[in-house]
Image (cartoon, rainbow, N blue to C red):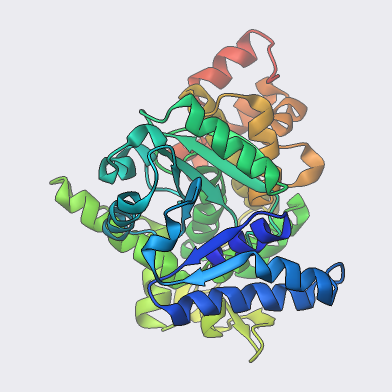
Length: 390
């Protein structure tokens, strides 16, 4: 896939020899072709350098070609069974010391490591798309991940010219949980009948480099839809009842009813031209979600629902000790998920707002828009003690 190809190109560019393995030779060659195109597009890569870079990428469909690798990054799509199969097949040919890293944005690493015969060598490395350009790698340690595996992953991230942040294992880790808040608030507002143009403009006002509906289109609504199906299956498998929230209803409508799968399909929340260039918001959104006219919500609330939901979630993650450092949270939020850079990051944003003022504002939002905004205990304690995030 594109993610694997992007990581391969990134590594080759930094002088690392790469084996690019896919199910078929044809797919592996496609991955190498991605790197070729990336070289052509880059102003800093001349023909000679391009030849060197491409010479370091060995495309193959043969699993045995991975035998001498020190570290393998698995970048297949977010499906436990598929990842488990790939883990077992790969470990069968790897040396004992080799590290196996799973590129996942939300699946718990400890759980994925159950497919591994050496969970101490198993770690999560969450790259962001496009992998050759995005500066962050979120490294996730499972319950059994060794310090040595962590050191390897950390060093590799640095060698790839990335900024690594380290988080403990929990569903959604740090970045996916934080950005998820903005995206689900945007969808809730859409479901409530708020004008989608207002939602997108509020994000721009906040200083976010990409608005939530456009982000969802680029991730693909189909991917989000599959994620929802997986969560429904997981919930029912656990013998619980699935309660659909507004965000899952919006996605299901877009994919099932409207047949709009996102940017790659040329139609999502936005319309796109044949080259995938964003045109305008889909006019059908009004008919779908605001038949009786748009709901009036104060612009300040629209902005805060998207910004402060992320800040609160980051504080919750800190409270759960999934995030080990405030600095990692600030860097991760800006570099990984486009949290408004001028704030200095999620925790810096809370400090600048003033923790007591943040508590008050969050209580207001919680009363109006739901428990997501209830201030976590950590925030209440710090505000009461006059502390700041440092």
